[in-house]
Length: 291
Image 1 (tube, rainbow, N blue to C red):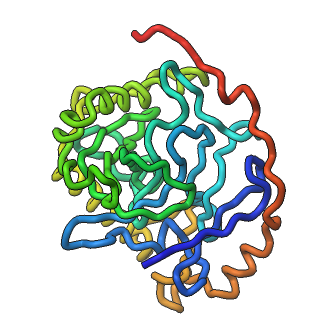
Image 2 (cartoon, rainbow, N blue to C red; image 1 turned 180 degrees about the horizontal axis):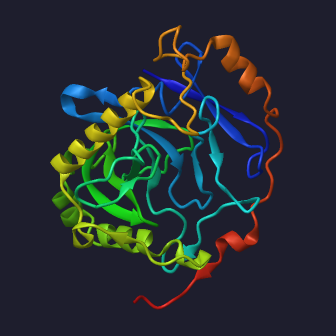
């Protein structure tokens, strides 16, 4: 199963979009049409890479747009970049999401006491390769961190690309602690403080800031897949989410998007153009004392 991407608009601008196609060249939704499992028998998941490691642009699957392309998050009319909170530079992993998952904002998690954040579940891929934006890779879950972001549950799955040279040695969160000392502590620190430069408070975590293991992570992923199933079968109110897809829903479903409709939606966006410059301020470091 292979996927390709098509750029539209100008990179580093408000009109930039990254659309997805399957092996047949058919436009698809990375949220709904890419299967969650790459290999269910081995608990291998697909991951859609939104943000390559070391970069700052806050790119994400546009859950409210038709075909859910990747686009850059916008705040107060400006493109959003994550700040570099010393000693971190950009995202410190390949960051993305597992397709066909959804953190239900109407469901209060029994462990965190908070409802879901209305997005697919997030993944931090800790392999050696810097992935490309829009790349779809196969990963195995190693553990999970339960972040509380402004009162919402925001799970962060720690995973490794199955093709990574270290993949065979990394099978649980304890292996990450042993083979990549400091990485998990840095991950907590990154998520705790990355919004502080924007005037937000530090994020909190359940389980005393500790990571849960592989089995726990897989169960969390499966639960968000069940929430997505309710969403796509119209058992749950979608709200502002765009659930149209080209491969999953039956032809008579409200969520079915025809090939012609998909092609027209892409055609309405701007053709791929010249890359806009990234503001120099994006490279600045932000310093402040840890509490």
